[in-house]
Image 1 (cartoon, helix red, strand yellow):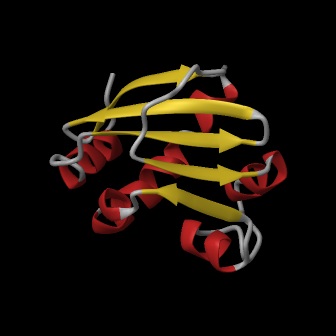
Image 2 (spheres, rainbow, N blue to C red; image 1 turned 135 degrees about the horizontal axis):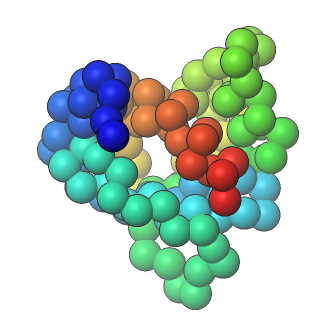
Image 3 (tube, one colour; image 1 turned 180 degrees about the horizontal axis):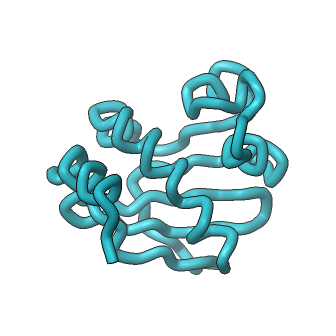
Length: 116
C-alpha cells in the first residue's frame, strides 16, 4: 500500500533508475530504484556488488540521522558529509542531480533497514 508521501516521492524521482549501496557500520544494503520507487533492498554481504554510488556511515551516525528529532549535524545528508559523518563514494552524478529526492528517500528507508 502506498501513501500520499510515497506517491509524491515517486513522482519526484520518476526518472531515477539506479542501484546504490547504503553501508551502516558493517552492514550493507543494495537499494535498487526503478522509476523513483524502491524495487528491492538486498542486505549483504555481497560478492562484487554493482552500484553507482555508496552512502557510507557508522551505525551511530545512521541512528542519529534516523532519530525522531535528529541532532544538529545529523539532520541532513549534506550536513553529515560536511562534518565527516557520511562519505559518498562512486559516481555522485545521479545523487546530486536528485539530491532532494535522495534526502527524503533515505529518511524513509529507516523502517526497511531496521526490519532486516
